[in-house]
Image (tube, rainbow, N blue to C red; front, top):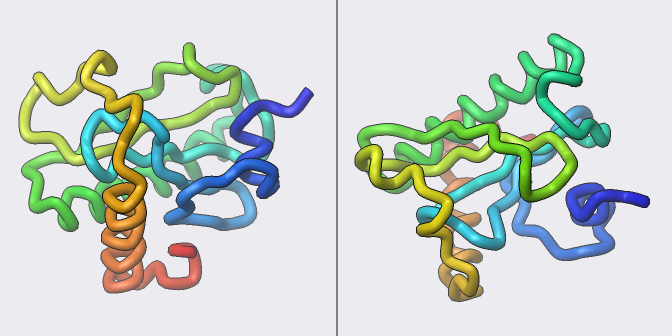
Length: 140
């Protein structure tokens, strides 16, 4: 059975995509810790990051770094977070979002019911920043 992320990637479930390439996608978390919280997910279903081929991990971290730079810039944050947790969905995913301090790293702060208009605006901010930074082809 396909994971919820595979169903989002395949268009069976909605997602606010900010990145798409042949190996990975980036879409907003439905329970953001901070505005701009993006998940970078491989198209291939792999449960744990330790099971992924090294070249895929390299690609995912490069994409996450690019999106992290965009969320940092779009929200004028001093840093971008990177978390690989892996307990919520059995499909490898990297979390990145703007942060102002260590207190921003808590999943307990995730908003379980974010405003859809705010989510749309966050996705557009990320896409616009990625496009400005030369990633227009991937920022869809």
